[in-house]
Every structure is written in C-alpha cells, then in structure tokens.
Image (cartoon, rainbow, N blue to C red):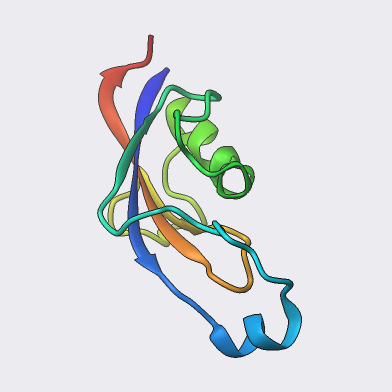
Length: 104
C-alpha cells in the first residue's frame, strides 16, 4: 500500500450563500493553501477535517492500493486526483498524489 500526499490547492468562500442559509459557525474550516498531509491508506491524517475526509477518502484508498487513471484520463498525472470537500459554503480543493513510499 502506497502513501498518498494530500495538498490544499484552492479554497472558495460563498458569502452570499452563507448569509442566506447558514447558521453562524465560529471555526468552520482551518485548512490553509499549500498545507500538506500524508495519508496511510484508510487512516485519516492527524488534523485533517472529518467532513473533507469523508469526501476524499475513497479516492485516497484507491490511490494507495494502486488505482490509476480515474475517469479515463481525467488527470494529466494518472496517479493523482483533484477532489473537493462537500462544503457548499466554503469548498476546498485537494490534490491527491500517490507517493512511491510504502505506508506503515
């Protein structure tokens, strides 16, 4: 099983939707651009958002077990995926990349 690097590539914020629909939240998202995490297959990296992990974990698991070429050539690097969390108010896009290192 391979390790998978998870890099925060983009964050969006839809203030109009937040104002209209969301109840106030103090600490909604602590992800920072460029922040990196290393996943060991099924194991959520320490400090990673639970909700975001629910969105990306199937792809992390697949990559860690050797999956490539999601959706018939969608990514330039066949051993990667660009996946966003499911937060409709402040989505975060993550680049997932298979590493050559084996997970512990």
